[in-house]
Length: 246
Image (tube, rainbow, N blue to C red; front, side):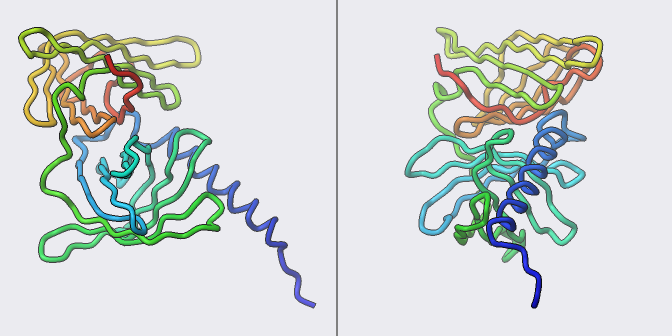
C-alpha cells in the first residue's frame, strides 16, 4: 500500500510554506530602501473577467513590490515578491501575515510591448483564476486632489509616514518622518517642504535630501535620489499605502 499525505495535511503544509515566504518577502523585500533607482512598470488587464490596473516596482536584484486594484471595486491590494532568472514573476498578495492570494506568471515581450500571463490563486490554492496583463504607456492618474493624504510604510525595522497637503495657490507641501528601530537605539529622519508635481510624479529637494515620488491610485513609490535623509539606516525609499485623506 502506498503511503500518501492526507489532503488536509497537504493544504496545511502549503499554507504554512506560503506564509513563511510572504513573511520573508515583506520583512526583507524591497519595501525598505531600494538598491539603485527602481524600475516602475504599470499594467492593465484582466484577472478572470475582472479588469485590473497594476503597478510593479522592480529593483536591480529582481525583488518586486507594488499594488493593484480592481476597476469595479477600487482599493489597492499590496503585492510583493521576486522575479526568477526565467522572468517568472512570483507575487504574494496582502500585508504581513494576512495575505489573500498569490500571482505567478511569465513576463514576456511581444511587438516591443511587455506582457504578464499566469494564474492568481487563493492562499491554499483551492481557487485558480487566469490573468493577462499588458504594459501601459500612460500611468494611472486622477485629480491632483487625490494625492492629498497620509501614506505609510512599515516593514521590519523601517517605518515612515509622509503627509501631503495642498496650498491655496495649488502648490503642495510634504512633511514626513522615518524611523529605523535598531536593537539598542532608534534613528530618525524628517523632511518638510514643497513638491514639484508633474503628472503622477513629484520631486522633493532640500539640497541635502532629494526624493522622487510616483503616485498610483491609493499608493506611493518613493525613491531616495540623494541622501542621507536621516540617521544611520534611515530611509524614506519604498512603497507606501495611503491610509487617510484630508
